[in-house]
Picture 1 (tube, one colour):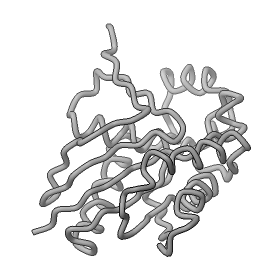
Picture 2: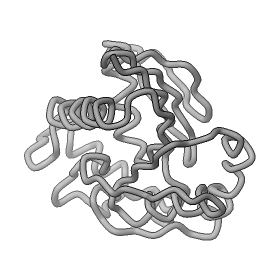
Picture 3: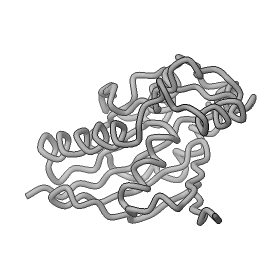
Picture 4: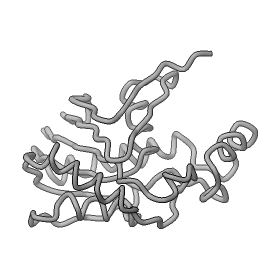
Length: 191
């Protein structure tokens, strides 16, 4: 039986976030604001005793994890399953352009079901590997949004995930329960 506590954190701000550009799998580092946000996050979650840390292998997530764990002797384990949604040829484009294209044709954009599968497999794997642990997971807004939508089983919610927002989950035998959200807003989508 596994009972783990997961803290999913979105990376700090990048220049692309500031410019309103989608990043996907692009290697975009944190900007000064993003580094400052990660340092500020330590004030909120710094008293939590993490047993392990996993991070997306993308630089903005790794850099956020490094700042959070600066004074702790915890290894950061990179995992590609924690990456942002693969946006194909749209990576680097303005958000409005990407959203307009996506409504017409989503060819080359990672599907929700594929993203859900990789998150589910990641959580199942670490639940077996680290039973009864408290784990920091540094990832991306799209992944955290997908995770919340899957837990709530409701696609009619718009999930807004700020930079360095966090989602605290408990997983008992792979049943996920939201404990706390900070910097995350849920809005019903009006049709």
